[in-house]
Image (cartoon, rainbow, N blue to C red; front, side, top):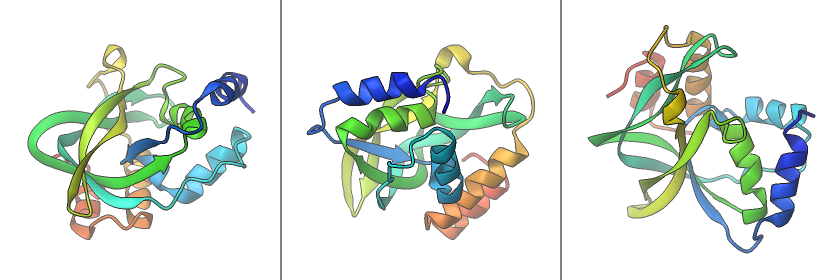
Length: 175
């Protein structure tokens, strides 16, 4: 258990359980094995990420804009990019579980912030929340993390994202 557990559990107890959130996930949380390991390390074994639906965020692209010591290089967030799209999965998260997702995505440590994205799922567009690099912490210094790219590819593959998109991730390409 880490030092953020009590903070997350307090937020969870105060959250509106009847207010689910739509969450667009495009990053390493899609790697189920790695996510399960993270849950175990942080004492969230009771939380299950739902199956989710294949989705694409519209008019955004990946940008490797957060230098991470843990990953050994820059990791990806989202940036506005008219006409571009990022594939991922759309999850409906119970309100009481949102603080766990925030912890995983780095809100608790101010690494990331929430932002609204337009997402296409099953031919319809909806608004969802994604997590992006906190602008105060964004930097293009240093190389992209090869380990992070490998985790992105594992997650995208296990999430059933389109093969051409997974290949693009493997090459470390943005648009």
